Length: 421
Image (cartoon, rainbow, N blue to C red; front, side, top):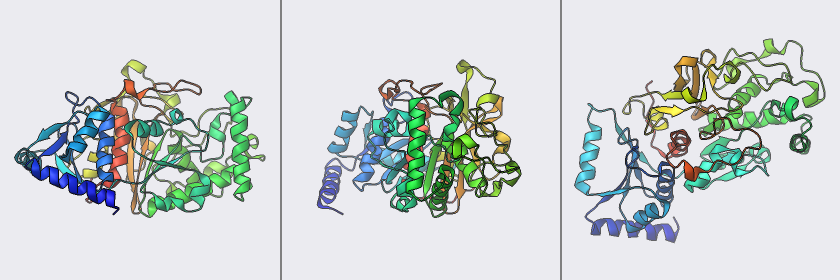
């Protein structure tokens, strides 16, 4: 521990004693919190200084209890985060109420700020990826990595990995029909092919598979992986197609393997099963996993419901679904949501639209690690398209859809209890 952190902790301890052991409560309900997203940033900032935080699951929208100090209060004020200073006896009363078997609440200790990696190529704009945007807005630090770092086993340096809007199958996002003549598509395809060759692979699909296998091993070894949009289904498809050529000539220079659908190994995937791959290069779709083309719902009625779990028995899915509303606005993407009957039985569906029989937000365990898949591209941009303007999160500081992302960011900081569901 460096001298600055020691000095900060001593200062907090001193000020807490002076204030008769008071606490800072950061409420996360809809009525009192003015900036839910930056509240996660203040919590992370506190953890960075090696102070423990209690996450009060299902208490006022999933509030945070921090040690009181003027410097933490000031940080809340600077970031526009609503907070309350409460006495030691009031904090004890809240914790006692939460501990009661009669209420579906729990206090989970957050111990250490997780080190975050965002998988994204050089040159991507921050607004191309919702996670990058919300991490920046919440002032949570992260580092970017890409294929070269993954293949060098640098994932081992991180606690949490986010997969950028990505295509792990080597089909360049299935953008061929609409954008094959666009300068950006030609440039990205050229860069990907050059990178694969530099790393010693004949095809982009082979290089992306190698990356997917490294990510799989990272999760199996105890890592936390969060993926959105096409990084969800394309990741599983790549794992299931190991050793099988599913790419047409415009993607890799030769034809796909005969009868490749029958060679797909669903036992290799994280979340999905029994899907049918989309063979046509002219269809903007990877497989039957995605619900985008099968949906029958309007923007005004497009919402998904968050499932409710036992906070005391199942704290992990409870953490991941903390919010100030149980009904969240839907949003689209290349992979908008997941076909319900193509999700493995051991995967939790934490958010779903029952009208469409689709899953939006799923979570599972793989080896010693965890993964979460979240359909859609940008929770506050319903039909985000190539070239659309950046989402201004200053206009959406209480976004329930973005809160789900930040729940996953804090998840690795928690002391884990065995999941019962």
